[in-house]
Length: 123
Image 1 (cartoon, rainbow, N blue to C red):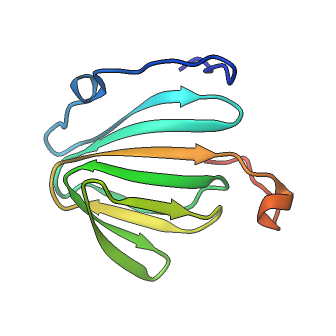
Image 2: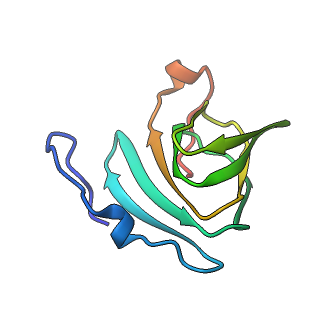
């Protein structure tokens, strides 16, 4: 996806229609992508898993529909539509869709001084 200019406002509509939940699949679509943030929409069928991973960016997860099990380190919680998770840069996390669901993910670039650690470049 081409970069989304930070200085340019935009609308992104009909996203659930553009990213339907597919049987036995996880799919994603980049909505906004620039030097400051990335916003990604995911769809998961029930039983789909994202194994433990981390991001050097600060992350906001918003479960838009369905339910999922979400783990941060050794803490686990059940999420329902409308629930939000904040992940500090570098926090290891994983998820499992308990029902078909849509989730939005916003990744925000942070500087070394904001995290107190070296900021990486991998997502």
